[in-house]
Amino acid sequence: MTQPLRSELSRYLRTETVGGSILLVAAAIALVWANSPVSDSYFALRDWPIGPEALHLNLTVGTWAQDGLLAVFFFVAGLELKREMVVGELADRKRALLPIIAACGGVVVPAIIAATIGAGTPGMDRGWAIPVATDIAFALGVLALTGSRIPASARVFLLSLAVVDDLLAIVLIAVLFTSSIALLWLLGAAVCLAVYAFAQHRRITTPLLYVPLALLTWYCMHDAGIHATLAGVALGLLTRVRRDPGERESPGARLEHRIQPLSAGVCVPLFALFASGVALSSELLGQLFTNPISQSVIAGLLVGKTVGIFGISWLAIRLGIAKKPRALGFRDMFALSVLGAIGFTVSLLVADLALAGIGDGSEAEIAKVAVLVTSLTASLIGSALLWRRGRAHAARKDDSEVQELPGGVDK
Image 1 (cartoon, rainbow, N blue to C red):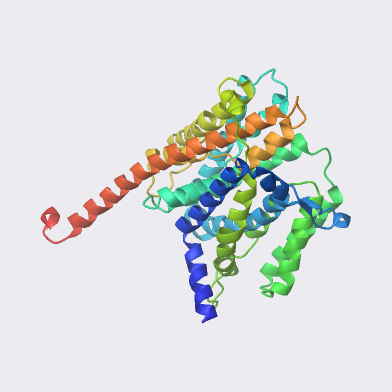
Image 2 (image 1 turned 180 degrees about the horizontal axis):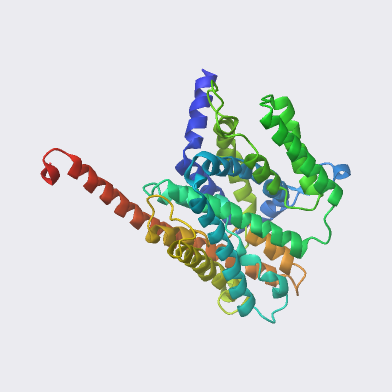
């Protein structure tokens, strides 16, 4: 009785709408908790250090959620991206090029806007990087909830865009905020990844090799001073996604089937719970549209992301450099570009890194509130646009089905 129940729960959690709902509920709980009379308990739990100091793993609960649990989500994202690159939508070179180009536009344009508006403001010499990253988990969660009638290629485009976007953001973090990279640990991570790729090539299947190897890769990446979630993406991209003759399913499909419920039902919601607790105050909200830091973040995310992603995509398609995703129009891509303005996790991280030591700390808080408000605004606008485009796609599908019936539209 236990096994069927567990299988049904796993199937339920693999439903993207359910995963998106759990994610948004966790974020709402965090926001309410962080602004309630018992808010101290939230921040005490989030900032509680746990883990062995000798291994440099005495991290706060919030950091474990961000660097540890989110690595599982990035692993699943890497698996899906690899599958689409090899046997799916992105197997076409020009279609694979589009999200890469779009991600570059979605990083460069927000950075230019933020740097221009915030020029001369203390902390903005590095704070221009706050609006450069799209939050994969939240953006996909909103798409799952409100874009169910949009063609499946929309998810592939947004996922690919967001993965490349976050990789670029991680590189920026390494360049701007890492005082030194431990080359030996980086070499250790590279060796682990090489062993993983070799084991995949040799068709080794035992988890007794892969689980310790994945943990060791994450640990080496963490101690190298690089965002540890990069280990999840790298391992996902190195996993085999083509079936061998006589093989029921590829290792990539098997791992995604097993790990995705854990990611959607536990890892991402817990990450959201500890990332979304931003303390709001009337004073901070009052400065939202007057403070140059918050102005640069709002304009960088909401305007910069939308214009950067959609503008460069439109230009690349018009020039023949890239192809539109299958069944998507420019209006669909504009709606997805608005979702690209949901910059939560990495944006909050960069705000802390860039502004925590500036003044009395209020600059970092105003930047976080700006990220929160802008991400919520982008979610609502993007949802409305996706809902409208979903109706258009559904109507088009209904019209085509009616015309295929014997006797035409009268049927």
